[in-house]
Length: 109
Image 1 (cartoon, one colour):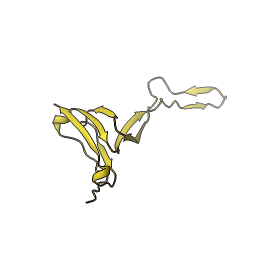
Image 2 (spheres, rainbow, N blue to C red; image 1 turned 90 degrees about the vertical axis):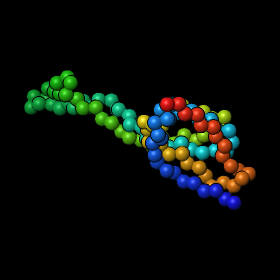
Image 3 (spheres, one colour; image 1 turned 120 degrees about the horizontal axis):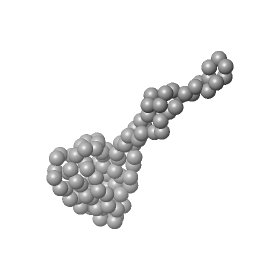
Image 4 (cartoon, rainbow, N blue to C red; image 1 turned 180 degrees about the vertical axis):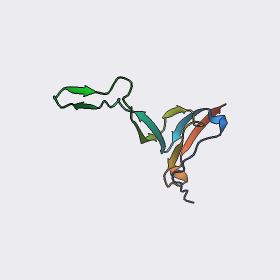
């Protein structure tokens, strides 16, 4: 029998506040989204006399960028996360018994 799974975004229950996973066999991909704060954008301009003007300190607006991160998990790979606090999606590939994925998951509240 062939087993199929895709990507299902979710957050875990409270008992995954600390989540350890070890891949023993097969491969899968862990999808997650991270928001990165980029360098503060400083606006500069010149006045009528070509004097360089900058915004007063503290008025610069930092920017954020959300990106999806894909981390392939192969036998021997380990990850530690707080799956309760982050949206993630494990992705499994079409498989059968001989190519099955085996992973250990340990959760601590």
